[in-house]
Image (cartoon, rainbow, N blue to C red; front, side):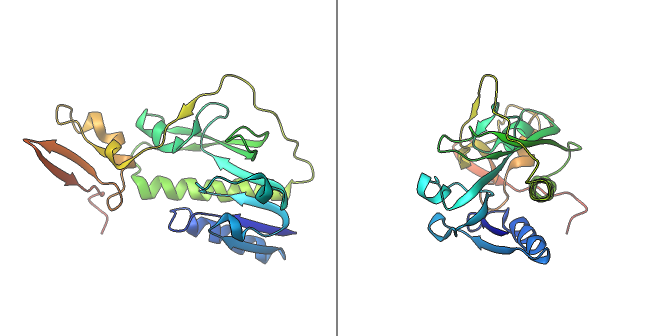
Length: 213
């Protein structure tokens, strides 16, 4: 089979997209990993993994299937950064949906629903790793059962998460660390570090576990 994987350049997902590519190639498949929609090849399946580019009809018609993995129980939690929002809400069990992409974002029929179990103390790179591994696992399961899996239309009332910005990493100086620990779990120490403002001055905080080097 011919596969294409589209992942944004610089995304945390890229190492896991490479892992999926290597697994498929070891199985004798033809695989192309790209970072822009204009580079998408014609084939059987396009995997859209951590892709924030709007994909048009012309690109989706290049493959028989266009597969997205989204960290929510669709149609609930459509939109941006669903795993981060749910961790911020205090959830340690994150639902994940593998579904067929459509022009209307996050609305396609789904093939697989699974859950990612967290302990509640993982920092960004740790839960990213668990999520990346789960994503690859679900993609491989889809490929292994592509001829028997049937798409199921989403049902129920939809909800949406907004796009997070660096400003969402602001700590409230009136709250305790414990009250804001889940926010500290989803900040990026380099791209969007936690910060607070006191007496008109902005201060940034970076978090790591004490036993990490």
